Image (cartoon, rainbow, N blue to C red; front, side, top):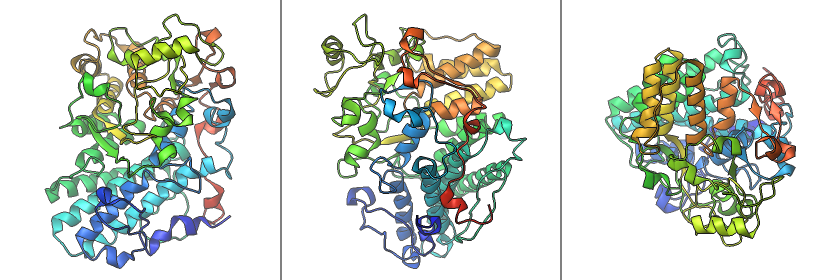
Length: 507
């Protein structure tokens, strides 16, 4: 076992940038460039930001399956949730979330390693950019971007390795190791309240710097002020800071109108009007069979998709009104016989699916309730990877207003998302109380299905994962048809990996 220190903090002397094609960074790879060279000019420093962008879509830890942010969405958000089904009984330990206490597992270690790598790179930028030659506005914008990356990473780590805010004694529980400079020394855990305070502080400073710089980004994959607002909104709703969540959600979606139905059905592989932040994808910027889209895109030729298509749970599907265009993005078996133990259909279901979606790969198998929401732009799994959409911001606003007893405001946000967007022209909401909260939860599950939210939402709400077999009204394989209560499996909290505790004697 090599030292966590050597893996994670190599950035003390250089910035860990992946080799990148020229159309993505428009520069030579900089993985061996010393820190002083990178920060000679703001033009060079901007390449370091692009390098962090690339860290979100590269392979890690010698495993073809760890692919940056896509892995977080799939293995930590989708798989262990209640509404995402795939016929993989051999993956039951991941899907049923049984690794939370296994401190030597790569699955427990990966998010820690990945996000602290981003944090380390961001710290290097934050502490060196002021000495670069170049316009002050460019320094401000670059520093703001680095602060946004750091805030996002610490927030994501807190969702995995810390208890829910509601169980934290107002944040007094254990948080994370708050490394904010370029040192690699031993550090104790901060409290969860201190982690959120740092996330807020980073975003406040970033927003001020974005504003004072007067600059805007050129690409959807670059962080900007709207991204900072979006991270703020997501962090605030998780911390149960409802006034802040509502305000930031509205700020984040400003300038990002909801996409029309044509764009909604186009495959979720390229930015639309409502994509606030994404990661870049192109044929010469791909992980081939190990990219996120190669694991989920229905038209991929990857065996992960052809043999094991990703499906919505039957229970959630049946909650989608027939008037809602989102219902068309999943395969209703429509009375066609299929194996109710696994969900797999025969030639009749395959022919039916091909008739609806002719770009389904020719050798793919068809499953009841398989998804047609997410496609690949090119084979085997090329596509831009979304991180924040304005749709999520409407849902955050609805939830935040609900918890402030502004039921009218919550209803308005839901109607704007569902009816006014055209996704369901018949939608209306007059629910209040517990029924309104359940409506918000249902439409978060429908709108954000497959985008990595399911488990994280259930954790913060302190709701159980409940999966049922077909015989019980669900659609899960018996091995995966489990119920996980909020107080089980270490309260859904991943333990700190050995590769940190073995190195950091302050823990």
